[in-house]
Amino acid sequence: MSPAPPGLTVAADRVQADLESLAALVEPGLPGWTRTALGPVDRQARELVRRWMSDAGLETSVDGAGNIFGRLRGTGSGRALMVGSHTDTVLGGGRFDGIVGVVGALEAVRALREAGVRLEHDLVVVDFFHEEPNEFGLSCVGSRAMVGAISAAHLDLRDERDRSLAAALAAVDVDPSALLGARHDFARVDAFVELHIEQGPYLEEHGSQIGLVESITGISRFRALFSGQADHAGTAPMDRRRDAGCAAAGTVLAVERIAGEGMQTRGTSGQLTFTPAAVNVVTAHAEFRGELRGPEEEWLRSAQDALTAAAHDEGSRRGVDVEVDWLPLQEPTAMSDGVVSVLGDVVDGLGLSSTRLFSGAEHDAALIARAVPTGMLFVPSRDGRSHCPEEWTDLNDVVAGVTALTHALLALDRRGPTR
Ligand SMILES: [Zn+2]
Image 1 (cartoon, rainbow, N blue to C red):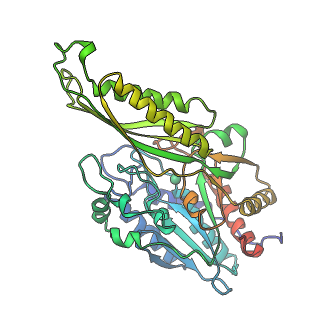
Image 2 (image 1 turned 180 degrees about the vertical axis):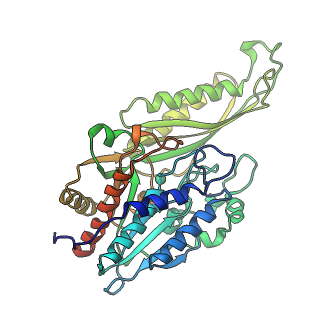
Image 3 (image 1 turned 60 degrees about the horizontal axis):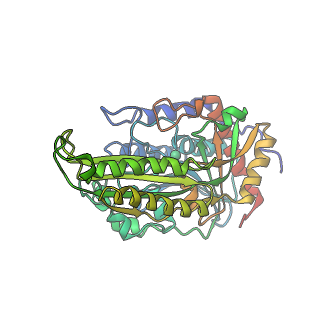
């Protein structure tokens, strides 16, 4: 690797100011730093990011899926490197998840321009629309659209109020039909890199400044419906009830049991509802959503079968009808060996300590990796906390990540095609 140009410096104060500006754009009256993609404030944040891109000298555009792009022309014939993350948050989320990757990509552009470095590649900074899962059970909406992994069936997913995802998108000015047509042409993109907080305790526990992601978890999400019979809580004998709530509760525990059998496997249940929601009525209908995660597709498929069987078992013991609907399985995704080794060399060259790891969180990078050689850089999360207001990464750690990202773009540019 040729040495980096002198004067290539990441400005910590700019990174901090950008993080604080985005942290100020939150939905009123909600916990943490809430800025959900389908909520009322996310558009302002994305407009701000677009303005920052312009100010940094990038040509900006928005695609049909609401993804925001900023392109810095290189000296070559239009081959590109892509870099970015997302700026939406979960309900009650933090100030760093996704945001560090967008702010970091912008700062990389500023640092390169200030050092007078012209890349041969175009540099395309992306703020992906709607990475976090919504009440329809769908995540990575923008990056999914870019790789053609979204369909009309997704847009017809319903929330509890029977509103469609298409209607929810239209309400935030994302045209559902334009979203379906937002497939991106990646033929001239040589690599994608995403900087992100780890969201787990591994880096902190190992004393590492940077995580080099080798693969991203597979995810399988489902909706489970239980139909029994409403009865009087005082008079209906226990052995004659068709209690949908109890069947659902047994299935929630089955998620925990099945996922608890592996070291890196995870299972979570949420959005549980009982109907009628009354203390003195046996539950007639219950519904919940859940998910399984793990690094191996084979385990995910067998865990799906085990959970479906467990749900039917819980139902049949109680005379409760059961339906388990699985969304399409998101396969575990390996990062590109070529990109990961460039990232590793850059991090070593900068004298930063690093660890290779597996990401239990999903990322836009998992979708983009279907089309482009992809790598991810992680920075530590204090106490491993994320998706909560306590989510925190020290500025020094963020700056180390942004520095690694900046130098990685330089190295990837000089390395040529990674395909
Ligand atoms: Zn994220």
